[in-house]
Length: 172
Ligand SMILES: [Zn+2]
Image (cartoon, rainbow, N blue to C red; front, top):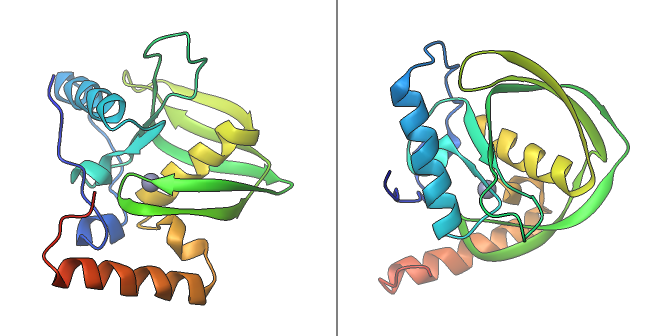
């Protein structure tokens, strides 16, 4: 296992629609293990493969009880098939440093996905778990949470990032 570099906005890989995964082999399991190590190191509660530069439809989440250590779950080729209600919650992103903002999401979703063996599952998620899944599924479609903000807030952030980059400073 190894910790991978997390790609940050505005890297192009974060804007590409990720490819479906068709092969379920040991390489895939190794990649999932790397993603878990990277997520826990960050630390974060979710990570999508494009965030480590792999443009494939894979994400992991861990929003378990803090006392339970490292119980993450991988979702492959996830698709939201039902959604209802709405909620607003504060989000941040390992690929969008130094910004948190309120984002409106569905309250409850049903998704279909495959596990690392290729078996198909259906899952209902609500509240915070549904937020994390929607955020990570967005990554697989080249969408970042800043895309859900008002143009004013988004432009303020872009300006701030440009300044940071011109100054040659690495974002934290
Ligand atoms: Zn993110």
